[in-house]
Image (cartoon, rainbow, N blue to C red):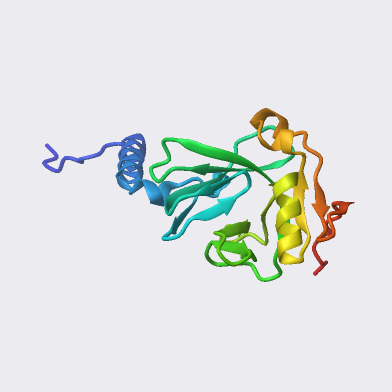
Length: 190
């Protein structure tokens, strides 16, 4: 009689054991380690108010994510600190940087003294393409005049309606108030 007994008798039993172990390890990971790259979730914490298209966010923590949308438009969502409340949805256009960032980059636009800093663009780690925010036309005209730089704009009535943002026509407003068609150049070829 053979006294040695095999703990696992077949390859199928090994496969089941390994699969269960892998599932357990996956479930045991902290949730931030399992974040999906598709939504590019980025936490932003500020001790000062921040302007985003359509509103001023009080000092605090927020999450920026790409919206899960069927639209070909770039849509950014801003959530509260624990991602339980959607604060706003923002239209954005692709922006490009030559050097691929290894951590999130949030660029702030120039603003006149006494006004909150404003997010101009956001880049997720590992991506050359980011999101440049589009402001409602009335505010874009004010900002362009105050800063002496063009600001991306869309019609005010569409900026305040999340359903209409997807169809908004995007232009750039110059410091003189002139609207010009948006012409983003493609990234340089390598």
